[in-house]
Amino acid sequence: MDKTYFIETYGCQMNVYDSEFIADLLSMKGYSRAASPEDASVVLINTCSVRARAERKAITRVQQLVALKRSGRPAYIGVIGCMAQRLGSDLEKAGCRVDLILGPDTYLDLPQIIDGLENRDGPFVDIGQDPACLYSLKPRVHDSVTAFVTIMRGCNNFCSFCIVPYVRGRERSKPLGEVVAEVEHMVGLGVKEVTLLGQNVSSYCGDGTDFASLLRRVSDIEGLRRIRFTTSHPRDLTPEVIEAMRELAKVCEHLHLPLQSGSDRILKIMNRGYTYGQYRDTVELARSRVPGLALTTDLMVGFPSEDDADHEATLQAVKDIAFESAFTFKYSARPGTRASELEDDVPDAEKTRRLQEILGIENRMIDACKQSLAGQEVEILVEGASKREEGYLTGRTRKNWLAKLPAKGVRKGEVVVARVTGVSRWMITCDKVLLKGGGLI
Ligand code: SAH
Ligand code: SF4
Ligand code: F3S
Image (cartoon, rainbow, N blue to C red; front, top):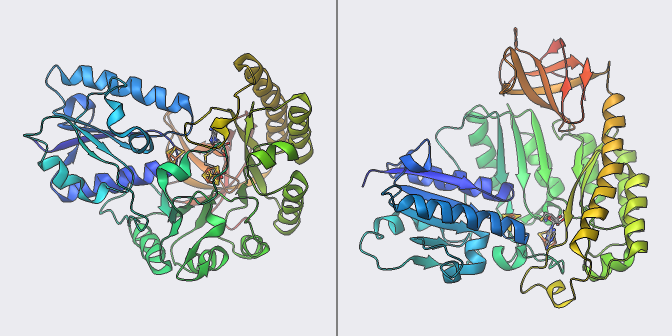
């Protein structure tokens, strides 16, 4: 068998990081990346379980690949990640006759496991959970000027709707020294911006170091220009983290703080551990201490028993807080979670209506926010050539907005200050580069 692999990744940034870890592991064992599944001997699908739809999508894709395999290529198909953890051998019943089923804590042995697949009858399944499992990613090459660095895995919060604590296991933090070594390694490969990842970074505790201290330590790394992090849990975000954001020039003024619902009654059944009032207080503190802070959030509609008054409270929260952007989801019952014991009593059409209503308000707010940017100066980290428009480069502002700028005289990896000359909902255009090297907060 030739040693070629192809990985398809679904779900959150945690999975993106894990896929990169696996790619590096395989390349150390002599594998090379294939351009498509047809060109690969091993195809891995890294899956997500967070909503039923995410699983359906992955299952459909696996079925397509299984059909492809019948024509001789690829030789092996593996389902890995959160859905593999949740379904294990039951994947076969879901029409996924694959060769390999691996949960998120079992990737270290992957090359040896693939070597052992040849004479097997039936899939190799390992969904064992390892409460100490942490991966360290130090690839030899990295094409992008941005990188994810996972600083913790798992989650202890057990929000009643959420499958993550079941499929990802208990929360554990990567030791401080390892996080720093990883970031330094990535900076050595040309990375200018890191995003520190965890399901709840505010509760990071590596070797007794809290998240605010971690930010300070990472910020000392020479050559690194920007630091982002996600996700912060509203209950655990400390004033110390907010102070670190204020003081450290490298930490971008962007906070993703999932609210989920504006109704205290629903927040309580969700087991989120805060009231809307407490959430607002945190937002007020953050906005008062970190000038120009961009606040984004996650919202869920149609949680069991959510009525018009609860939904109204969420709409009001969206208007009051004026998030720079929001991810909005319809509640999806996940087997084994506490909420799945409650009746999923909001009809799908009503969930759609509530979602649209939130999106309508949110989109108007995003537009207003973008309009106000016209003529202003923003700092952009240039990430590479625009895929859509020749002669343009794209990058992100400190607030994480996508921006494009003329390619002339500017290179990937540079931090520039540019004037905003055009805005649309998802992209800002900067036709004038004012300053190279950055410096604007
Ligand atoms: N750890 C992060 C969120 C991880 S999941 C946090 O605590 O915020 C990302 C988002 O998916 C959640 O914020 C939530 O809005 C949504 N989500 C999680 N479980 C869901 C479910 N069962 N149905 C619909 N949306 C869900
Ligand atoms: Fe899920 Fe809650 Fe943990 Fe986020 S904090 S991963 S929503 S259980
Ligand atoms: Fe999905 Fe697993 Fe992430 S369930 S959201 S890929 S941790």
